[in-house]
Image 1 (tube, one colour):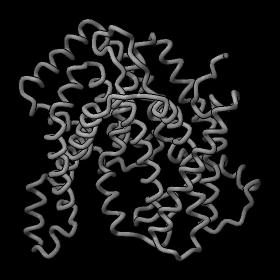
Image 2 (spheres, helix red, strand yellow; image 1 turned 90 degrees about the vertical axis):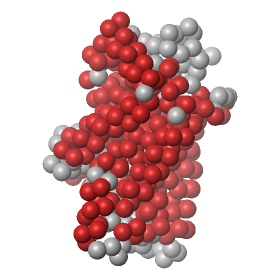
Image 3 (cartoon, one colour; image 1 turned 135 degrees about the vertical axis):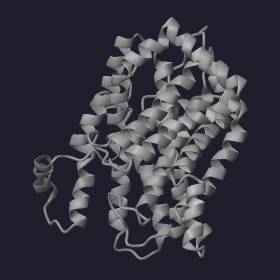
Length: 390
């Protein structure tokens, strides 16, 4: 989650700031606000659900659902690669604990309990917040959206031996060999989807998503795969260049697999088909896991490639937005849940409610960020660096 750091001048892999990745990080987390605002207005269970749903919104969100989190994990893994160019492993571990563990603990104690309280209220509880708060720790607090931060922290610390190995001469030679093979025969790039496909086939049926770190092995491994992929791609400039050159092809593969995915899960594409024909088509596209694996890889790498190809400028707006991303992430869902809860009695329709929830979440998160960034004691609680002495 902490922002990417500029590489050292003259670094063997890259000697310039990857502004495309910076902007991609900002846009990915901006999309998250829209996505979480929409989660209340689809049929999938979430922290809070409005009785009004939109099938059109659900169809759009289903597409983004397959690759939005892998993209964020990939960006986070790339951030580790950039961070290690400026820090020793010990400094890196300390930075991760400060920037991830402290905000996580703060969120569990302060910013997340209101979400759990609203859940209790929607299930008929009449407790006041003061009465509710001790009960939260009796039953165990829920990480809500901050599960992502906990997973990134674990990936970062557990991955230190791997990062060490890949930074060695043998590791550099191995990565160089991998990139050479990919450059010689680019279709090998799609084999990078195999680990995620295997997770879907063998782990998802046994371990459904819990977001609690333990007994969440399918989700844990899926995030880890894209986190490590981001680290590998950002560790070798030629890998980044290869993805950038093949961005259009990757996009077309992603969109084609999205079509197959919708068909495989029985959307309107196969409505009216005989049962045998639907089963045959599902087998032809490998059930759900083959198209989703390629859909995810294709879209994530395509978006990365287009960002690198077309975004080359930084500036004060990017610096400001990059700093705002983490505080926005920490506070945004609590605001979303509160706004959605306040609008439950209204019957103004899904789209107006969605627009209000998204707008209020953005404005509320921005106001919190503007307040936090000015207070030295609050900055570390929201993952911000210390203010430099003037």
